[in-house]
Image 1 (cartoon, rainbow, N blue to C red):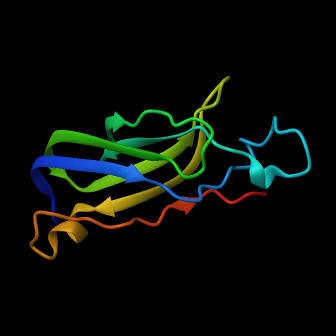
Image 2 (cartoon, rainbow, N blue to C red; image 1 turned 90 degrees about the vertical axis):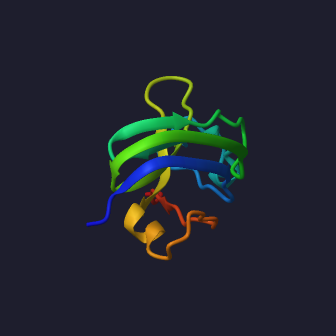
Length: 125
């Protein structure tokens, strides 16, 4: 297994067409939950360590952040981006996530990676 050691710089730009979860719709009133807007933020982890969190964007399913995070990584194996809905009461609602293995990023030998990442969303019941 390949591990990463060094300075990691990540810029989180935007997400598009996020879908509300069944849990985030629990207080929604009316017959059209597809119009429900999230208050999303992204939590960034390397392995099991929290590196940072974007600001919460209010009432949008296509948020833009353009937040940068820089950290030293020792024996890093994976990066996880998890999207949450900032709930006004109680725990925040999980919306979607993705995991990127450092091994995949280091395969092409480049020091720079820029791409859209597909999020795995929690399915509505």
